[in-house]
Structures are given as structure tokens and as C-alpha cells.
Figure 1 (tube, rainbow, N blue to C red):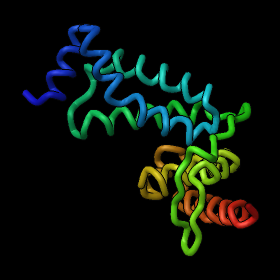
Figure 2 (cartoon, rainbow, N blue to C red; figure 1 turned 180 degrees about the vertical axis):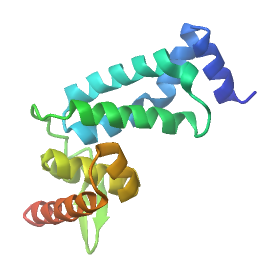
Figure 3 (cartoon, one colour; figure 1 turned 90 degrees about the horizontal axis):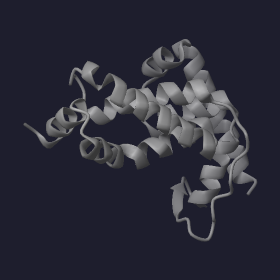
Figure 4 (cartoon, rainbow, N blue to C red; figure 1 turned 135 degrees about the vertical axis):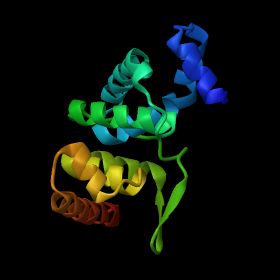
Length: 169
């Protein structure tokens, strides 16, 4: 068996150590994803908790068609979209963050994250799913129960709004 299969087997047997290992393996990436979609650190924490409860409750339904991380990611995305609401956000420390290249300019990572959080819910969700997570418009449309055209339009407007926010820095 693979290490992932061993971990799944342990979790199915309610082995707390295996459950903790599974959680530790995926928590950071899943929290980041939830935070980017919800735009709120507290909501992301709730989403993470709810998602892992669902993972452990329904792990017996994991068929192995995809990697376990991809299956967990789908749960986090679904829960994040359901939870989505803005209650405010905390400023990322710009001194500690690095920079990313944005065409000709270098942009502080904290400034970029702040701009993404400031996007309206629909724009932010689609931007994160398409540009950060790499989903196609067809996949996004299925997840959000919208048309592909709506997904494309929302992404276009999200990018335009981000460019405007980042150019006015």
C-alpha cells in the first residue's frame, strides 16, 4: 500500500494519529484556499474545520479516482463558496511579504493578497479558482452552478478591477 492508502486506512479505523497526520498534511494549503475564497480569516478557519469533519465522516466514500488532496480541495471549495461572506479582513504585514512580478512591475505579495480580498465575492471566487487553483471555466461553472460565459465574464471583470487596484497603489 502507498503511504496515502495507509493513512486513509488508519483514518477509516478511527486512528487519531492517522487523522492528525492527514489533517497536518493538508491543513495549510486548504486553509489558504478557503481564505482566498471567503476573503475572511475566521470564515476560512470555520470552513477548514467543517471540511475536515466532512472528510473524516465521508472518507469511506473516497473512490480514489483522483488524489486525496484533490478530493479534499473540492470539499473545501464547496464549503468556502457556501460560507462566503465578508466580515472584514486583517492586513498582511507588508514588511514580511515578498514580491511577485506583475507584467513590468513587481508587486508586494501582501498588497496583492489585500487586493484579492477586496474583490467582490463573485469576482474573488472565480479569480481564485481560475488563476490560482487552475480550474477551467467549465469546472468553475459546474462548481458554482453558473454558465461558462458568466465565469469568463466575472474573471475578466475581476482582473480589470485588480489591475485598477494595483495600479493605484
